[in-house]
Image (cartoon, rainbow, N blue to C red; front, side, top):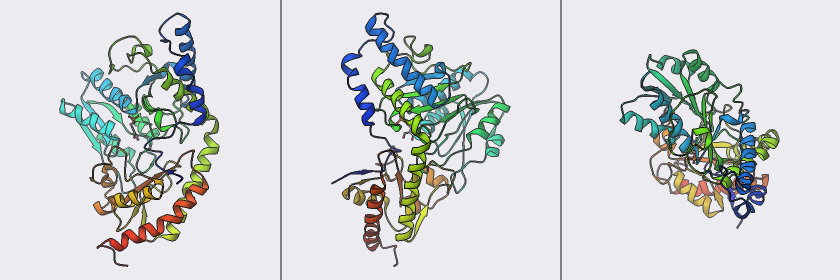
Length: 386
Ligand code: PLP
């Protein structure tokens, strides 16, 4: 049976052209880029090229890119790095209730070590009011951290306005841009963001590689101490193959971003229209327009998301019942809960996240099987009165 993968916000499949490019490197490119002999120089050339592609993708300078192992490391580095560097100036950090656990739990850790954290609420669409950020600022505020795109709803948050507020008050601004990368154009030269977190495996590169954007002149502590790699910001011999793959992914995606974004957005619309036409009592979670082109979060009333996910999986379709990190627990999504949705609406929510590998046929297949599955599951639900 053909598998239809609609869980691209959890992770993506490595693009075949990236695989073809990096596979020979496992054998041929083993040098340490810090070494000055030929093997080292060869690795350095590829490594520098990858940095160029990542920087170009987000319109940043090459020396503003720090390669990491993943988005989680980047967020830890940003939050702890600023907190420890600025603790003599203040101990207050502002973030939102809908951040990924890599930000939320780092903030919880910092809170347990004496930092004062404000977790701002969102409205029923899952958006944050820039004015609420302004009101939360205190004399000791050292950092604001707000994600660009939410992984569960796809909502785009007003980082430009929030960054402007941070600048006005001389406060550093970090944004988790893991889900935004490769789905919308990111212009670090225009955005008032000081530090931003990215991850390779969300953009068709392998797991184990990420990047942190650190604007020139920003001072923060290191997370990992050791050698002088990454302009002294991140120690450890670099994951060359992962980094090269990440660079290649950025090169490919950047060249096709406009066309692919349009294509994926129209597939997402086809999926939404097809579902709404055939199934009643379906609710769109998140903002109807201010969101990523690929993400669709729907609550199928009177249906347990876990049961729907399992039934779709049996039919060859991979979706998510929330963020990958939250699944496995039966707790309703913290993102949907903070939007004020009833627990039963949260528990019936499915996230479809489309990617480059998806086609119209994939979407039509999903539309053709999902009505019967939902009907069958509703028939078993004691809450559903047909
Ligand atoms: N931030 C967001 C918004 C994410 O969706 C994820 C992954 O799901 C991460 C951060 C963490 O990235 P990584 O899996 O590379 O640690």
